[in-house]
Length: 427
Length: 156
Image 1: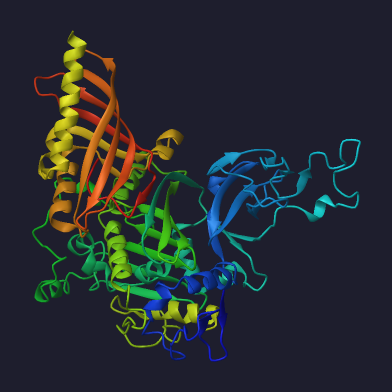
Image 2: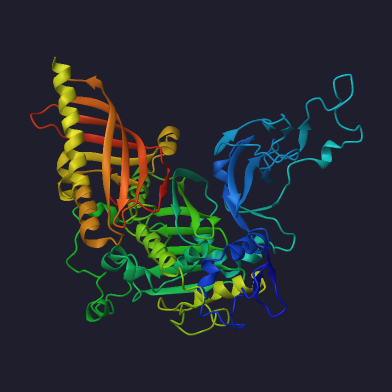
């Protein structure tokens, strides 16, 4: 287990000299070791995922009825999102109070009683222990002591908070209320998750061979989006010449917004700089793919909300999804895309959401390239643990003092992320 | 007898389709469909639960051409190839105009570095025309390997 040394570095127990050599306050040179060291990954589990953070677990729409449940993870810990008979939501650690087995194994389901198969200890959907077979023995000894209290052996319940259908949980009593945690990012979340009933349109999942933090860097990075992605630059879904802004809270949450159609006078810069992702002559044979319906009274083509440490929401055109970031190992994370629409979507709009899903997800014209970028970073930093990245577009400081940042050529939100990470990790 | 001929045609269509993707003639891929043909690559969990989101959804051949153009000219990914294998081919419906077929598939993926993985397995439900040169009217590929390793570029 990693420990914090007095001078503010992470030191691995039994690994002398293995410290993270990172000057205090520096958030623009990121030691590559933070992406490759298993000890740091373990420390993150405790200090971030089981620390004072709100972790996404799912949508209220995924568990609409009493007894409904979904199994997922917070960091490496298996958890259950459930709805009890009074309609209340719970997030429970999916670990039997008896001998530690997974209580529920299916991704989704509905049951009145959650029974562990190992010794049939049974729990209510709120986590209360309700059944222990042979608790009083069978007439010739054995069984549990008569002082055994069922109430003390339920499934461990986490704090739960919801925001317009999104469900979060926290291990820590120190985590501020969710509204405070979302802070100035709340309006951007509420623009899409506006309280209308949601419907799940489907799931896409992938296993990415990269450290989970690279995904938060990527989704807080307005600089790459039109350089890596031809579909963004060429079709004007996103260009750094557009009107746009980024915002980051010290809690780690943030948002990146681009307004379509605002750079007609400036987009020629892509040609002048010979940027290969901008190709004027590139055409679609089926333009319906990008026939966006403006749903929110604005022309925001891209809104990426990064709800550290486990969720990225997107609205790109008419596609809306939660992207659940589940760390699996120092060099692996799972990305689960839950696509949603509104319950009152007219059929034409629903079809647009399905067509535009081609832009995102594991095979998305845009999103597949992000995963490629992350994986080539993870490959290239092997053996470079003593070196750092260089994150100075738009300065060297986090953006907290002057927000929102009114341009899409700043890495300030990434620096904000590292400020948050260093604070939580104590390094 | 007629059913055997149709089954042989279905098999030939699957094999030629696979050869186009596996051996470098990706631009032919849309030609295995009629102009209004539909292609869906959908995870088994969505298919079973009636959830409509697909990994790739082309509502016509033009969208397939767009997918090929993006793969060949736009998208950034590391070089790799597929190898398709089919089994358990059955014809489940035969009408005067079309044939419905089902088959299992496995796709191995090999990166330029030389490592091969079982990339995807699942089944195909497809409708093909009863013409001299049969084409797909609709091809739904339902993949079991729902946690995609890395990312997916080429259609299955």
